[in-house]
Amino acid sequence: MAGFGHFAGHRNKPCAGAALPRAVWGIQRLVVFQIRSIGWAGVDLFFVLSGFLIAHLLFQEHSRCGRVDVVRFWTRRAFKIYPGLYLIILLSVVGILSPQANVTFPRTLTELFFLQSYLPHLWQHTWSLAVEEHFYIAMAALFLVSNKFSLIPRWPVLVVVIICASLTARILTPGPFTYETHLYPTHLRIDSLFIGTMVAYLYYFRRGVGEVLKAHRIKFLIIALALVRGGFGEGWKIRGSSRLFGLLCLALGCAILVSLTVFEIYTFVPPAPLEVFPIMLGQISYAVYLWHIPVLEWLERHFGDVVGSMPGFGIYLVVTVMLGFITTRLLEDPLLRLRDQIFPRPGPTNISLLLKLDRRIRSLPFHSTSVSFAFVRKLIALGLVKTAILNSLCLEDCPDRRHSASRRTGYG
Image (cartoon, rainbow, N blue to C red):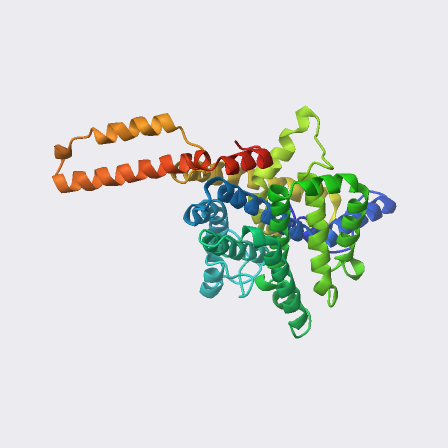
């Protein structure tokens, strides 16, 4: 949903044949313009939220089992991210969708291998997916190191170093401001994601921060709003020098707002009949983000500046959400169910069932096929079961860690 506002409405003329009073058209134009002007900041909020959610999952697994299965983490994220994006790329290559740039082999490879934040690509909004993918690589590498040498106690220092490195890189980036050189590159934007990981660190390991936030919630809310406003340049744009500290202010402001939410300082629970809508939007949000630019391009190509009016903008939202819903239900959900069967979430397993399976495997005859093949098959099966049993027992082996994980996250 982050990109809706950034691309809503471009001109200042009402649609031909409009019968509404001029004042009404002026008001709706102002609303659409303001949504468009600040909509780009939703990407930074998305980065902070994504950093928080990914780090929370990894901290949880590390606390439960003392290590992170990096292959499982990477594979689970691939099942989530790749299918929807590759569908958009396929539809672009075969000509059903028309991206902003000409479809060429190098641009297609850029999209396929998540290099959009550095190289010319097909769709202008996929650069953020490249930043996200590079963040997954960085997190996998960090936790791979942490499996041998724990980095968790030093996480705040690590985040500060990354923030300083990104800020320095933005300051040293030469030339006139362009999105491709000053806003898209991963090394200039990854600090927002790691700021989100810091929220997860505080939530998981420093729960006392919640009491501080609660005691001074008004002050922190004012600070957050001030930082968010400070992230915008003149005219609510990100231009020139405002990008240097503006992006950092915006990320810090979003991080405080996320903290006030996850620590349940400020919460909003819609009435029971309406709860389904935010839940559904959360489930389809990735597919909606993928579709929002292709839908805009298609509408403008066939109907002109249709999203420049409130009714047209409403049609744009409805079509995008519908396509996001269809893509999620028909493509993403089946693949995620398959993923959960092959690479389930780490956590407690039914030990009695695994032990029964273990005994059943032990009773298998060796002469069912050739001896050598049956022996290898039996060793593999036993190894898989033993591994699963050890994983399920990791909490029992570390009672202090089990108590900590249960108390901090509610996962027992």
